[in-house]
Image (tube, rainbow, N blue to C red):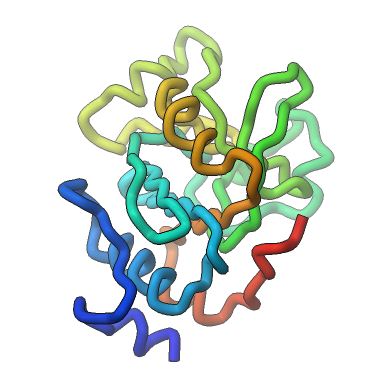
Length: 205
């Protein structure tokens, strides 16, 4: 059934609304599937396109609220290494610094320094948050402003976005509510991942 939804063209009763924003065909297909199937269960949702290194934030009705470039895990891959959430950053091997693909129930929270984040996966310590300075040689802010996604793989797995985007788009969308984050895979088709993944109730905390 999921494959059929992914193949559905415009004309359905409910459609994702991108306005005049640009997105890949796969991002549009996933957003359309979410809207048609109500997989977001009446919650705001985010699509993260790892290939294009871009984040798309939608309200509960499937209308795009904004999109922005993002920094992602430096290692390519869609899985999380076992026990990675219990390790210090320095102990995480370079090949394990991935941004995992999947469907996650997310909510606003604070990190250990009291800074606002969107917590995506507690066990794996994955969150979406304003870009952190990093070391001078990492040039994180500069990477976010670059014209291509070629240099956007630099984090330990978290998703870094421009501070203004986080404060004016992400935080308002998830204020006082949980939402769903869909991180699209980069090693297989999104329809394959979400078709085989057990649905997580949007009411989970």
